[in-house]
Length: 151
Image 1 (cartoon, helix red, strand yellow):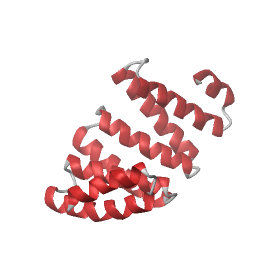
Image 2 (cartoon, one colour):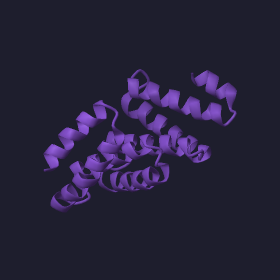
Image 3 (cartoon, one colour):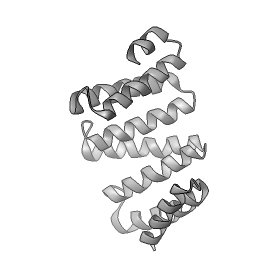
Image 4 (cartoon, rainbow, N blue to C red):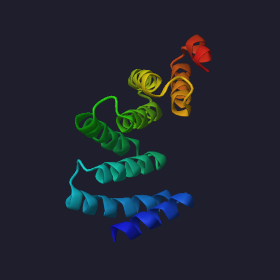
């Protein structure tokens, strides 16, 4: 049933039916976690999908709580320099930005950028996106010169 739920989840995602995605992921996640454990990569992946869906649905508090848990697990299991950990940090920073927690979002986005520069290099698309995302937050905080330089 989990495979069917995920397949339909991808289908509903392609249609931007986020409520259906949420419903399916909320059914699939406990089953996967029961079978594999919370620390398994598939459980973490499903948690990330659900948290992202919650963010799209503007359920930002729930998304933030889940993303903090995901980041904590990634840090514990994979360490801070793993790209999955960096992505989890990025996802949380985006949610914090949307919740208006700009200072924490900026700090986290600076860390994401530093890690991506170090791991991936200056020309990698994920690094460029991290620069853009930080610039957006800096602009939102009124740090216009730094935002402009970064953009």
